[in-house]
Length: 213
Image 1 (tube, one colour):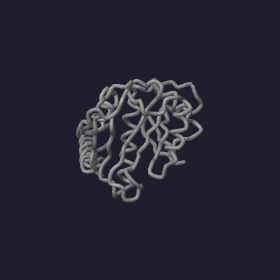
Image 2: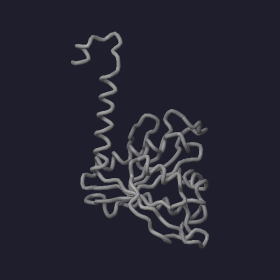
Image 3: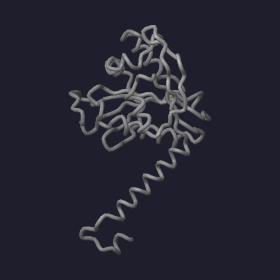
Image 4: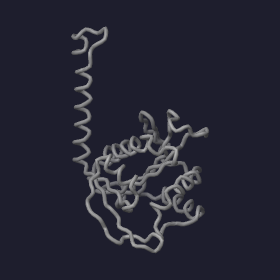
C-alpha cells in the first residue's frame, strides 16, 4: 500500500477491498444523481462491481483518509471516500483516462474531495508521462460533480444528449476534460502566487539578507 500525503487528506493506494461495503454505503446518498438504469442496483451488485473494478489492470484506486478528522467520522480508520482513475487502455502509453470519486455525506463541502482530486491528478500526470489529459463524464443533473470538475479546472467539452436512462427517462451526459498543458500552467501559476505571497510577507525577527539566502 502506498501513501500520498496532503494537508487535510491522505490518499492510500489501492483502495482497501475490505472496505468496499463502506463505499457502497456512501454511494447510497448519490443514488438519484449518479445511478443510471444500467448501473448495479443492489448493495450486493455494487460490492461485486467495485471489487472487480478496482482490480482491473487499467484502474488506479485510492482511499481518502481524513487525517485531521475534519468531518468527525467515528471510526478507527477515518476513511471518508474514494478516487479512481481509469486509463483508456493499459496505463503504459495511455493518452487519456477518466476520473471517478465519491465521499461520505459528512465530507460534502469540507474540501477533502477537492484536495484529494488535485493529488490524484498530480499523481497520474507525474507518474504517467504519456498521459495527455484527464476526463470525466457526469450526468447533467449531478450538480455537485459538475461544480467539482469546474473547481479543478476541467472544461466542459460537450454534451451527449439522451446518453443514459434514469427511471426510464433519457438524460444527457456532460464531458469534462483537463489537458496536461492546462494542468502544468495551473501549477506554475499557483507556485508563482505562493512565491509572491512569501516574498511580500513581512519578516519577523529575520534579517533581509537571511531571507535572500
